Length: 246
Image (cartoon, rainbow, N blue to C red; front, top):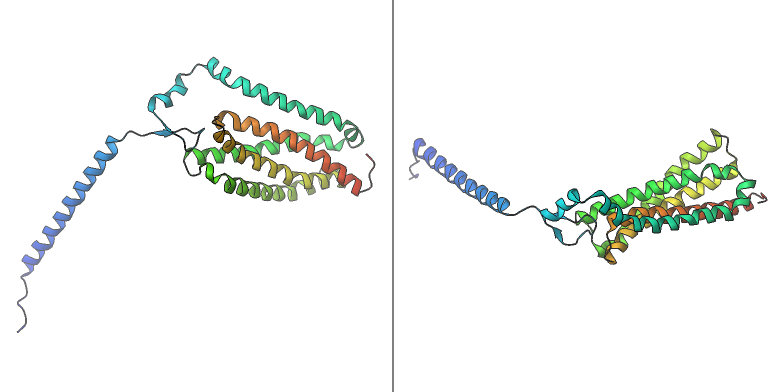
């Protein structure tokens, strides 16, 4: 004999009761989460020392209350050091003065290469510092990050050189051999900038220094010197290959 079916009204009341009970449980869980969130104060991680200790609200607000002269004094020492290192660019230019006199077209692209190196390294420094601040990467991730950024810099430089070199030759009328120098130098400068831009923040953290103050100017100084040296050395090799006397 078939079991007796429940009346429709009893079934509806049962379902409605279960639904109300589920809603009450969810409301209780939501209230508990609200209390947990409200009870924990938000903290901000030190952007300079990614992965380090978290800062209190007082420490975060210290930046806004810090006077401009104390801020300048805390930075001027590093800027002076990097200014001295930038003086090596003048030494390099003086050492290759004869090359510039014979191939004046090379001088046209010194600002371009220096600016490109600074832009590439600046992008890399900003990306790495943001990742460190968000604790996406730590000091142990340094080899992987540096390798990836170096490859990204090399690929970006190759893509740019494929557009820049033909442009300077066919549009600006720059000689073929100098265009080849630009084509070969851009990827190298990009690789150097990306490598230093990713490695210096980790090096600062390892030495207990603040990468937010040091990384960008250090990268710019080193990239300018290394990029300029690479530019003239590549030029010498290319000119020798084309049989051009220096």
